[in-house]
Length: 238
Image (tube, rainbow, N blue to C red; front, side):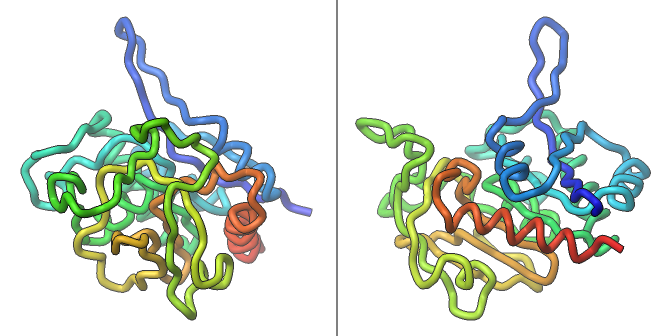
């Protein structure tokens, strides 16, 4: 039986002129628990993205820093970015995997990367945009809400993949100050937070959420999301 290989986008940090590519252990475990094998990907050229999309069975675009707003036609008013090549690499990988009809799962930054890559836009800072919205950064609550606990409710749209997993409404965590503004064409909005922030989008072969399901490792519905994604990838294996 072929093992399902899931590429994971890397994030970077530089200390003392030494650059490191990494991602949180929770992403690795999330894929492993669902039966896949996670493969961490550094920054890639277009040619490398094509090769990886041919060889691997799916792609997970993980959380991280904000997408550079220049990629969706805005000046930077409230964004804190990683190195530019991280954005470019995420875009290259996403386009290559879609081109090769390999499934993609976006988490937190991942949903924003996908939306921007497909022509959508983002709200750069939720509190300054609309002060009536919930606080979507649960570590800033007093006391802070632990990463593996729910922060608010998400409401799911009937007929979508996410609704099939979570039902009408379910708890999620929250670690973002940005969100989708104008959704990219071709996507269905599949979830909203209780204050109206877009929490999920999907189209054939692509599924993305604004929260961090990999932190809810003891919750059966969140584990089912990972299993669903790995099954999507398994269907693409010849």
